[in-house]
Amino acid sequence: MDIFLVVIFGLVIGSFLNVCICRIANEESIAFPPSHCTNCGYELKAKDLIPVLSYIFLGGKCRSCKEKISIQYPIVEILNAILYVAIYLKFGFTLNLFKFCLLASLLIVIGFIDFKTKYVYNSTVVFGVVSGILFAALEWIETKSIPWNYVAGAFIGFGIIYLIVVLTRGMGEGDIDIALICGLFLGIKGILVTLFLAIILGGIVATIILIFKLKERKAEIAFGPYLAIGGIIACLYGSRLIDIYLGLF
Image (cartoon, rainbow, N blue to C red; front, side, top):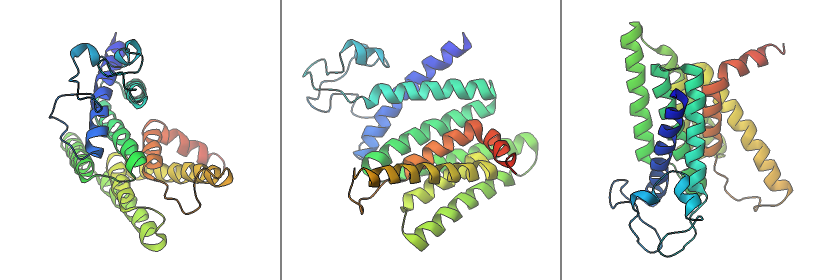
């Protein structure tokens, strides 16, 4: 029953994430106007807003104008629900459940927007930094100990990507912000795993793109999605990956 509720909650929040992704990318308010078809303006009713099921029942098309609905919508909803379940199974009903569910959802929004626009918006960065500070403060209150791990994680994430941006221009300034947020939420070990995975994943994808000439050699490739993926994996499996790595030596 608990997992079922987590799935439902994850799907509902995932539906809201789609609103954030589309509207933030278009620099629109996420509150107004109500959800509507971007093609014909049809205002969506409750029956049109059921996560995943509405997409299936409508055949992936607008009820009014029959314009095709992006597959992004069910993908984001399902992905968010899966991550919520995985986080719940790992952390149980604790503060970390809310902390890392929020991080996962935020990284989904940032990752999808960066993939589409190659831009990281200040609104998502401010929300992430403020949320990270609040969770660190809650841990400080609970443990009576200053959470230096998260402070250091934020500085490490910010510092490493900042140096890469300054020295190589191989990444964008938005990547600095994403690394800062991941470090603030995940701490020292978590941000190191995040950066390692992001660089590996980004390198693999860039190599595939070059080999198969999917883009021009000088085409810009968003690195934010790989940081987002790395951050989510680090959240769930960071400690295990570190143990595996250390076991090799």
